[in-house]
Amino acid sequence: QKEVEQNSGPLSVPEGAIASLNCTYSDRVSQSFFWYRQYSGKSPELIMSIYSNGDKEDGRFTAQLNKASQYVSLLIRDSQPSDSATYLCASESSASKIIFGSGTRLSIRP
Amino acid sequence: KAGVTQTPRYLIKTRGQQVTLSCSPISGHRSVSWYQQTPGQGLQFLFEYFSETQRNKGNFPGRFSGRQFSNSRSEMNVSTLELGDSALYLCASTPTGGSTEAFFGQGTRLTVV
Image 1 (cartoon, one colour):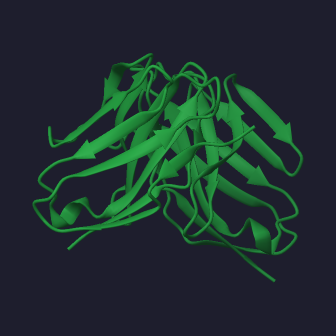
Image 2 (image 1 turned 90 degrees about the vertical axis):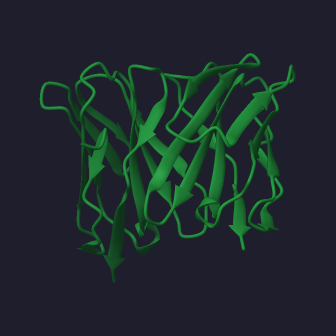
């Protein structure tokens, strides 16, 4: 079992709609979770971090964390074509290293 | 504030050779982590250095090694290169490592022929 799992996609969402990205993790002691966006040919860029159960909002992005169910999600409201990218979920493992999922490809269709 | 700087950006090496990649973290950041990214395996953790000490290590063979200098700059070395080592190598820096946010450099694209 991978430590951080994501659906590889592609996830296709119409422009203006809400994109929902999900991630599960296996290490129950993980405390820190991150969402990175990676455009093709570029390096990952941090867009959200979340440490407590519940929701955290930043502009059009909302991260949700449920430690009991061991899942993290990212909602993107009013999706734009520029949001088309691969989204990487990451968690800090018990060994204090950051482990990444394989990423979900998101495509926003005009 | 300058970001994370990786050099070189691109590299072509022959099987059996060795290679050294360099990473300069954001000023004030003391932790540097290295990752290998391939289309099939995604982002895989290689190792993390903090204050010149390797603090964490991933599941890579001993051909992959690294070090960190007193100014927090880090180097990664791969010896006896194999075709499968072709990948994008990314380094990320954090202020103290672990539970703080990591910022990535642009990566070094290594091609082994």
